[in-house]
Image 1 (cartoon, one colour):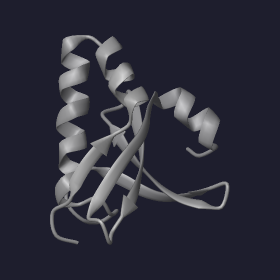
Image 2 (image 1 turned 90 degrees about the horizontal axis):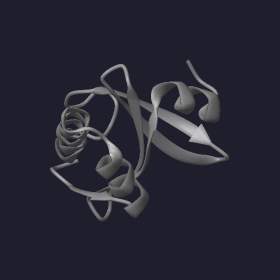
Image 3 (image 1 turned 60 degrees about the vertical axis):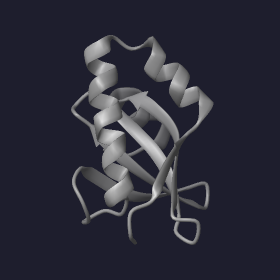
Image 4 (image 1 turned 180 degrees about the vertical axis):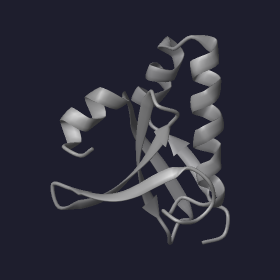
Amino acid sequence: MASCRVEIEARVHAFLDALDVKSRRICVENLKKLAHGPYPGRGTGDKERLVVRGEEVYRLHIGRRFTAFYVIMSRERLVRVMEILPIDEAHKRYGYD
């Protein structure tokens, strides 16, 4: 996939706004990487494909503190970031290690 647009849901904006400046900067820098390689094994970042409630979802670890969840719409060349969670909460909610 050539470069794509990264779209961030409103709740992700709210999450980012609540973070301290350094954490917000780290999250935003990592989310930007999705524009050039959203699939696992491409581009940079620790990414993985998951199946959640029958839907294909991807996750990106951001440092050791956060996990972003996103979907890829390849036809539209769009990555939609749906949620960012603290890593422990992400593991509990999505049941992976």
